[in-house]
Amino acid sequence: MIFALTWEFCQRAPYVDVRGVDMFSGQALHAAGIYGHLRRGALTKGDLDARLGTLMRAAQNGDTAAYSELLRHSVPIIVRVVNSRRHFGLDTDDIVQDVMMSLHSVRHTYDPDRDFTPWLASIARHRLIDAQRRRSRIAKNETAVPEIPETFSGDQANWDVDGQGDPELLRRAIADLPAGQRQAVELLKLKELSLKEASAASGMSIAALKVAVHRGLKALRLRLLEPGAEADSDRNE
Amino acid sequence: MRTDDLIQQLAGDARPVRRLHPPVLRTGIWLAVSLPWVAAVVYVMGIRPDLGVQMSDGHWLFEQSAALLTALMAAMAAFCAGVPGRPKWEHYLPLLPLAMWLAALGQGCVQDWLSLGSAGLVVRPDWQCLPGIVFVGLGPAIAMTVMILRGSPIAPMTTTALGALAAGGLAEVGLRLFHQEDASLMVLIWQAGTVFGLSFLAGLFGRKLLRWRLASMR
View 1 (cartoon, one colour):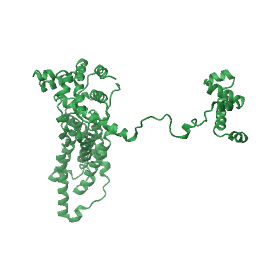
View 2: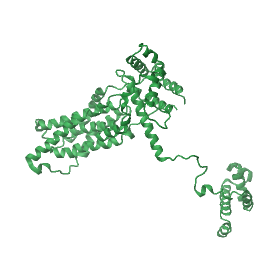
View 3: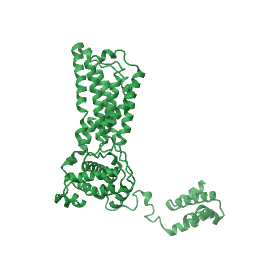
View 4: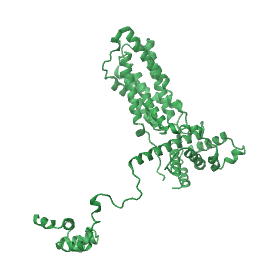
């Protein structure tokens, strides 16, 4: 238990100044449209929290209008929490939406007898930390490259870059195939017919087509990749 | 997805929810659910024949009370840890009774040493403690798991470790009602050690157990 407490405390140590964040100042309240009320003294911080608490209580009872209003007022508060901490490389909108979905999933944990903003800020803070943890985990396993390579670096993925793609050579190799194999390759690979269509067009059974195209491709592979090997293969067969 | 659209979707999904009870009440519910299980296991295993004598031993009673208080405070702390926005100090609620429990066991070790010399500090294998605590603590642990899953996973490792400490502490109290092992060092190593070990392991699995279950809105 002490290990767990210490671990989580250390994990959150850079962000523990939650209470230092004034949820009721600046952009948060301005964006919420209630900054003016506060400035004019028409609305105190306690009033705001009571208002949000009332909305949340109604939302817990299934009041969709109250919930919608509460969520709208929550956005700038969440933004405020997120912006008060480092979140390099993380999109603020993504975090805000993540926090809102988290809020939605645990809305039954809000106690109407307690303040709403510490409850919301706590969720926002923890989800931000989760997002940072996810990002650092991904960063450990991924390498940033200026340009994504078109193929993998292995030879097999690059077999056609040095002349193996000569269409005339391929045409001659196909022409040299036995008639059945040639027809199967032409129908299934060049014309890209389905097995059923190729069967109807050629009069061959599907099983025969499969065998023929398999043998045809094998012969082509030998002929194109290892010139001279086909003769050996033929002798072996 | 735009945030406004998400708000609309979430608001449209605003079904009534059943609020969590306050942590004190939840602790009471957990105890009420767990005690019958512990009592049943103690009954099945057979109450130790010298229980009457032990009940008149102040030191034994203090150890049991401290262990029970540790379990209750750990349960309350676990329930508090699952509610966002509650103060951090609540996570440390079981530390005081835990310190009292360990101090009582430590004092017992010193007493055994003073009265029996090195023979009072002999450590023998006592493998009955581990399955005993696991079996007695099974009911409380299941009840605790169900209850902490209702909370929010904002401190999963702490919540799980505290929940396991609660279940283990209660199991330890039950174990000593049928298991005749009162040498303080043995209790400290085999019984308290098992409770702490299980709490530690449970804490490690906290993030696996307690996860955010978000609706797929985006």
